[in-house]
Length: 468
Image 1 (cartoon, one colour):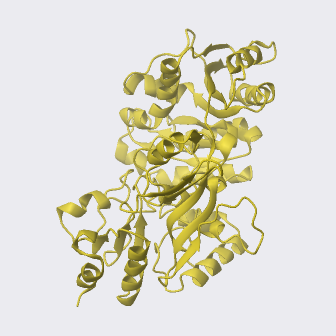
Image 2 (spheres, helix red, strand yellow):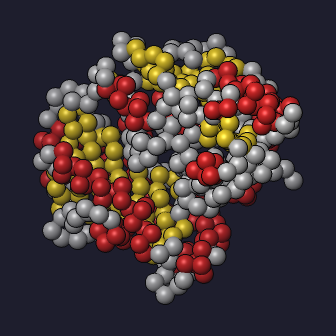
Image 3 (spheres, helix red, strand yellow):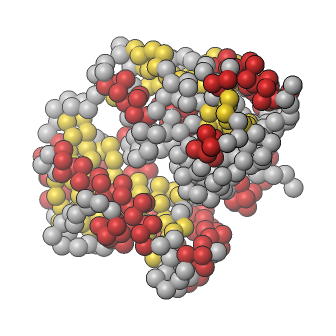
């Protein structure tokens, strides 16, 4: 009996998609770098036991498994690497198992979309704060597997900070039930943290217990024009102190990327009468009345605030316009030609120096390149994207991806930063892990992989650098 026949016998015909047109959507990858790589089948178990069964059958037949959530990743972590492997889709594990408003917790299966969790929390007057542009498509299992960040990291932390417990299928098919909802548990190693951010290479997350927070009752949103990135960092520090640390989001945008959104994205409008080299989009939130608009206004009007001009959104529609500018930047880059994406982080105070040094380095290597720096200034995560020179073809520019990216990563590391801030490693960056992480770190990573998945069946070729 073939592996596909065995999977159908054990899991049912609806759980197995053989090669053909129905498989196409699972083989596509958002960035297009790893698109249409084949697989033996797509397996869609209906529950955790089905996931465990799939893992055991794959092991019997010597097949690798690529766990896949909403398939919204940007580093190829959910794309196949070998035609003999299986894609294990978690989309049918989409149940909210429990919501406890008094304990401020929610337990959900890995296939629940992020927007579904927002709704479930709001239905009981609570907030699940993880949020970013793909929230209608991405799934919480993938969010945890990549330790997703997004817009609200400054206030609430990454996905890791929001997880209290996990349920995980291990490489041998055993199920670890760690779905605790405790805030304190020092009874041994914190095993859940090994699986969060591991991109499915150590185990497959099938459910999670998550933290909830009081619902937002008041919100103040402003866009500020500034003369420099240094002024933006200084203003962020001032706003954080003056607002009583109620800043939820603080986004930095250079004039270049903002202009791309204005030119190539729908419903984007110039935010201020005068144009500035840099902009800060800041949002304050509170779960109780806190006069946030007044606090924000006072802080921005201070003589040493450095704000060239600003607008505080008078209503939700205007705030949405501000956010549309920020969220449209990545897609708008396509209108200006090919782009090279870099997702790095450095200490917040070093953001201006990093941007200056990285801009100089890539311009020296590729005259006419258009650096597009934007991102989450509050947590040091800068998307230092590069748009091709006007006179250069897409193909010629993309051929420089490796060389330009290495320059950017090297400068981030000079500031003790990271070359993979929030999009993960996937199959795009294991080479950079091998190049930039210390031998000790790499050895520890390989030891963990060998201990949890000695046959290298779980998401092979991802995250962990090859030995030697």
